[in-house]
Image (tube, rainbow, N blue to C red; front, side, top):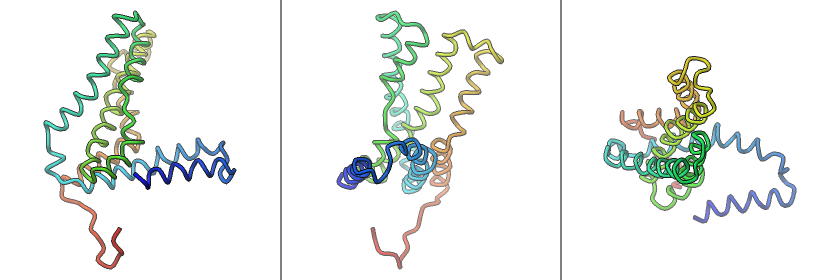
Length: 194
């Protein structure tokens, strides 16, 4: 955990002493979301064994385990708090959305090693391809926007296409396919070990 804490502390010190302007935060966030995180997920998934990736019950348990809190929070929002469809969907997303890709990757990789990356990849895909598009569709349907531009089916299609366009989604998928095909990074015999 020391490297993770060190980098966080370094960022805080850089902002505190004015080495990096606080107004640069959106630029760094954009860099992390578009480049650093997708490439880290790609590299991490390439180190996972095909047998771990093909573990269907594990992947299914991750999907169900992430979506149950979403469904419960949605139901509580609708039944108990009497929120609208869109408000209940947003409540469900806020309650169930795991920060696996951002904080989970360095923690699980440091604690568990390459197998921990699989949980992050599956969690990231569930949130990016299921949870967020479902929330967007429910919010739009709740606002009556599903009828604009082709109905609910078109809205679902657009939401999924928008999700899959993100590098944080398609790079781990490419890495998974490559890992299943037996492509793994080789260690350089002349390079110092890390």
